[in-house]
Amino acid sequence: MPAVTKVLLAEPRGFCAGVEMAVKALAWMVELYDPPVYCYHEIVHNRTVTRIFQQAGVVFVDDVDSVPPGAPLMLSAHGSAPEVVEAARRHGRTVVNAVCPLVTKVHHEVKVRSREGFDVVYVGHEGHDEAVGTMAVAPDSVRLVQTAADVDALEDSGRPVALLAQTTLSLDDWAEVREAVERRFEKVWTPGRSDLCFATTNRQMAVKAMASLVDSIVVIGSRTSSNTDALELVARNSQCPRVERIDTAQDLPDDLGGIVGITSGASVPEQLVQEVIALLDPAEPPETVRATTEDEYFPLPSALRELLAEVGLEANRATTASSVLGRLARR
Ligand code: SF4
Image (cartoon, rainbow, N blue to C red):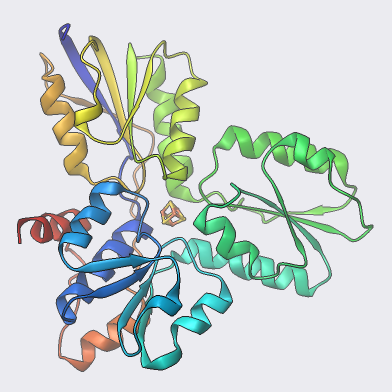
C-alpha cells in the first residue's frame, strides 16, 4: 500500500440519534427476554450491527405473522406500515416500536395532508423499508417519485400537492426533484424544514467540507443503507478525485495513499471506522473536519421504558450504542 500521510475524519459521521435509540432498545430486549427476540426488518441497515444481534439471539423477519404468539417483537427504526403495527400487536406479542421520531413525523404529515385532500408526492427510494412504511399510511393519496423525470410523468388531478420525502435523501437529489415538482404544479405545500433529517444533511455537509482537502474519500456503510448511498453520491459529485464505498475494513483497496478522508453512514458503528484507520496506518494522527456538532438525543420507546420500570430498571442516558454493541459482541 502506498504511504497514507494523513487521515481526515468527517464530523459528524456514524450513529445518529435515531440509530442510537434503536440499537440500545433492541439490546434491552435481548437483556429482558430469553432468545429468540424477534425484530421486524433489520433494526438498522448495517451488516455488522445485524450480525451482532443475530449472534445474541435476535431473529430478523419480514413478516410479523411469522412471529410466534406471545413472543417479544421489535419494529425497526425505519418505521412500519400501520397494518404491520396492528398485526404485530395481535396474539399477545410484546411489541416495542423503535421507529425514529423523525420518520414518525413524516408519517404524520402524510396522514394529515391526505386527510385534507392533498395529493402527496413522496420523494423516496422504491422498496426501501422507510418508503414502504410511509406510503402505506395513505396509499390512495401518495405517489412515489425518485427523479425529476418521474415528476414530469405525474398526472395533475387539480388537487393541491403536498411534497414530502424520505429522511435519508441526498440534498442534491432532493433539490432537483423539489424544483421539478414546483415547476410542474401550481400549488405545492412542503414542510418549512424539509423531511431530510438533521443527521443525513449534517453528514453530507461534512463530506462536502472535506472533499477539496483529500486525495480520496472512503465512505463506510452497507449497500442497504440509503443515507450512506446519499453520502457516497455527495462525495462522487464533489471535487475529490477518488471515492471508495466499503462495508468493512476488509473491503479497503490496497492502493490508497496521500490524504484519505473517511466518513460513515448513520447506521455504522465507530469501531468500523477505527479498523479502517488502523489498516491505513497514517503517518500522522487523524484530524477532524467538523461541519457541525450534534447533540440530539431520542429517548427509548415509551413501551420499553414501561417494561423496564416494571422490573425496576432504568436506562442510563450516558450509555452509548457503540458500547452496548461492543458488550454484545464479546458475549
Ligand atoms: Fe432518524 Fe435520520 Fe437517523 Fe434515520 S438517519 S434514524 S431519520 S435521525
